[in-house]
Length: 250
Length: 311
Ligand SMILES: Cc1cc2nc3c(=O)[nH]c(=O)nc-3n(C[C@H](O)[C@H](O)[C@H](O)COP(=O)(O)OP(=O)(O)OC[C@H]3O[C@@H](n4cnc5c(N)ncnc54)[C@H](O)[C@@H]3O)c2cc1C
Ligand SMILES: Nc1ncnc2c1ncn2[C@@H]1O[C@H](COP(=O)(O)O)[C@@H](O)[C@H]1O
Image (cartoon, rainbow over all chains, first blue to last red; front, side, top):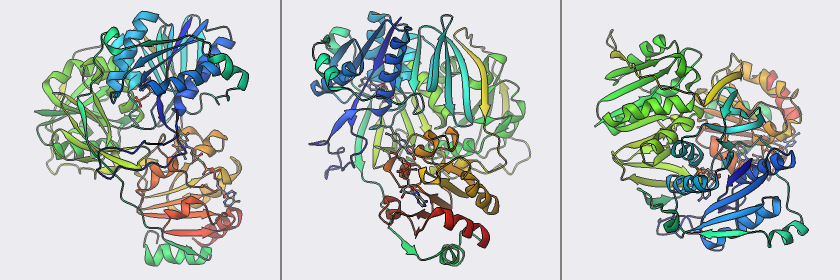
């Protein structure tokens, strides 16, 4: 079974972002970029499926600027077999990404597609569900466990009330939650080897997809800052403040 | 144009979140319908019909809709959506699962987790773990939106005795792709995290699952819900449904007590709209103190028993 993994280049999760002074967007100049953490989990899961002999090939794909090839190379170093880069400098929203991914699914015919549950830049949490709709495939979102059994997929999902287990027909779309696995780090020899793995560059035009978003970004502002409060010296003082100053307990 | 709101419900009860989403819908304005999807949901429809501002309740009650699996639920909503200008749901794991699928079936974008309504097509939403607030405008004819419940005050129940008309939807979406197998739901007598007035959360500093009992005893006294950081969930101290943060639950209680939590931006994203924040941490430089109204630099294993005794 071929497994397709969609990855996104985003700001490193440790970086504190700044909003541009003209409020047009956040400022990404000279900011450290990385693979979206949920996509690292997606790559890890695909590689583990290959190690278990369930997957025969792991293909990674991204839609984004030239620089996103760095993240594809990282995925190749982590164990993916080949990469597809759909190159664009447009701001790609989830629907555009899902449309491009649907074309790649049509071409590559994977048995399973794994995405992150959420890109930590837009915090959209949409692309996997949209891809499932566009390809007419079932979806197992927010997965904390997946297993292929008798040609079907068992997915345990993290839901608000706890955990839910579903069985899906294959091919299927899965999105990863934090507890699915703990991604490995790339080793130096693998990073070297990854440079020689195949990376195919495509354009939205040759895929025949329109990536422009109909959701316009009008303005980006910093959030209201919270004022730091005071330090209290003891539990007694804390309780006194909560009762008599903040009046949040009685 | 009219607005369709997908009702959120659990264990046969209409969830609080629905009244918050209805409030957001009322700010957009227009005729407002609530859609109740599930199996054996008559009582939920009845409750939804009593929410202030609701003009009609549509009920799709069928075994195929049990557990609101994404495939049949989105297919059903795609059938109904042409009559509406907006479709709204809570930014819960149900709303997040179903609405993007619906949007793509209709060929439109989706706007996730709005926190303010600026006009019929313009909304505010947090991005980058709440470190920036985006104002976005949808040029799609159908606007598909999830709503952060804590950002909108719930509508009340109507004053009139008879609620909105309830109408059955006959359309049954087939589903041969996904099957519900089982669920493990957290059982608790405590308030729901999303709507609790007081939340006490533990982090990696708690050290073990057993130590979370220190929080439980205080929660009992305060009528609080219990939350956790990602590190505490990953370590197995607490179940996943307790995770507060960018990729967990969003809470906005009157009082949030963070114990043994450092205050990473991903955690702050889930709780910094609390009215009063208390932090208990032995590291006086922990970032959590930058957002805390009251910070106590102390070992939690001394502070928590003292707090329990004195409450
Ligand atoms: C993609 C992604 C998504 C994430 N989503 C979330 C999310 O939704 N929610 C979330 O919480 N995190 C999330 N995180 C993780 C986040 O970055 C932090 O790693 C996490 O919040 C840290 O948890 P913590 O504060 O419990 O642990 P630590 O950062 O390890 O902090 C433990 C704290 O406990 C204190 N402490 C230790 N012992 C004691 C003691 N005896 N008494 C008092 N204090 C003590 C220490 O001083 C320290 O400050 C996410 C990360 C990523 C990459
Ligand atoms: N431009 C993109 N290229 C490849 N994958 C993407 C892209 N955007 C989103 N994805 C995938 O969809 C997941 C969820 O993203 P989102 O729906 O934007 O929050 C990510 O973790 C990726 O797996």
